[in-house]
Structures are given as structure tokens and as C-alpha cells.
Image 1 (cartoon, helix red, strand yellow):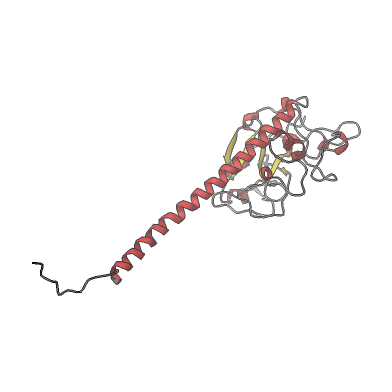
Image 2 (spheres, rainbow, N blue to C red):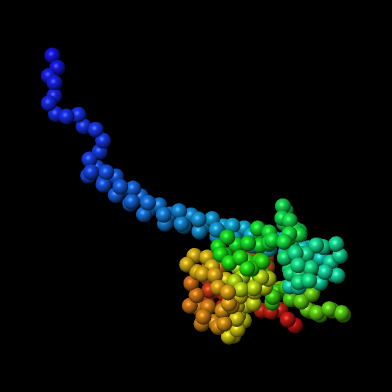
Length: 240
């Protein structure tokens, strides 16, 4: 015969148990938030590197079909009949390169995804990547200026160590490089702990104090992370 129990039947959780569960959830959230943040940052970095790699390979494809000459900083529409530029009055190097990237529309009022870095928060830049003007700046021909003509690849002395395309911060199409002197650089170090900025670095000391890092594609097509101090290395302009 079963003896009935005089103790009341228990239902639900006690206050202590609820507080324990809440504390555990809080600990898990505190652990997961930084992990999710790092995962998102890594995804943005990977997307940026992918963009740079595709732009670099497309630039080399362009050169292979144009007598080994890289795209000029500011091509003239009259030199490229049949080409549709994003801005007919102010075309840039990427207008000539983008057709070599599959599934990327050429003519559009908004910039294609390939020109947008997911770590760049400002929307006023048409392109978040700039071409090293020391590399793609050619020389004047009859009836033209240097910016209208690209530089032959065979004049780049060390392709594996020469910047070609990199994160750009304050202008939409070009980067200038410190060449062992006090100058300016438009390279952006917006990844990691860095922040995007609307003005160029005005001195080497200012660059050394910068946080974060950027990404760069070299003339041989490979990509790498670029720390502020690394951007101060001399980069020959290849001018005769």
C-alpha cells in the first residue's frame, strides 16, 4: 500500500535556479559576442582580399590584351571607342578593368560590388580601391598626357614587391606612396582596429601612429596584409 506524501508537489524553478540560468546565459553571450565579431571581421577581410585579387588579375588580363600595358589612371573615352564608362567626363582605371571580371556590370550609376570594401563605412567614395599612380602612370604621347596612357609591365622592376592596388581612404581612384621621404599616402588602414579617414596621411610619423591594417595587391597578382609601417617602404616610381 502506497503511503501518501504530505509534502506539496513542486512545480517550476526556484529563484536561485533562475538566477543561475540567467548568469550562465550571460557568460555564454559575453563569450559569443567577441567570437561573432571576429568572425564578421574575418569575413569582411576575406571579401576585401577577394576584391583586390580579382581587380589585380583583371588588370593583368587587360595588360596582356593591350601590348603589356597597364590601365592608365584617367583614360580618355576617345581612345577606347565602344567602351561605356561609369563617368564619361571623368573615367578611371577601373572602367577598363571591370569588363575582365565575370558577372560584373560595366555601366551603372552605382559602383559595382567589386569596388566596395565591406569594412569601409563611408558611402561618398565611388571606389574603395586605388591604383598606385607610380605604377600605372605612363608617359605623354603626341596629343595626350601621361595620365591617359598606362605603363608597360616590363618597366616594373620588381613586380612581387611593388604595390599595384590597395585600400584607398580619401579619393576614389589612386593611391600615392611614401618614397622614403615626407610625403602623403592615401592608403587606408580600415581593417582590424583601424578607422576610415577622409584625409590622406600627411607624414610618415602620422602613418606610424596609425592603427589597423590595409590590404594590397602587388603587380605580380598576389595579395597581402599591409601594416602602416610596411607602407613606408620605398616604392620606385619607374620614371626614366
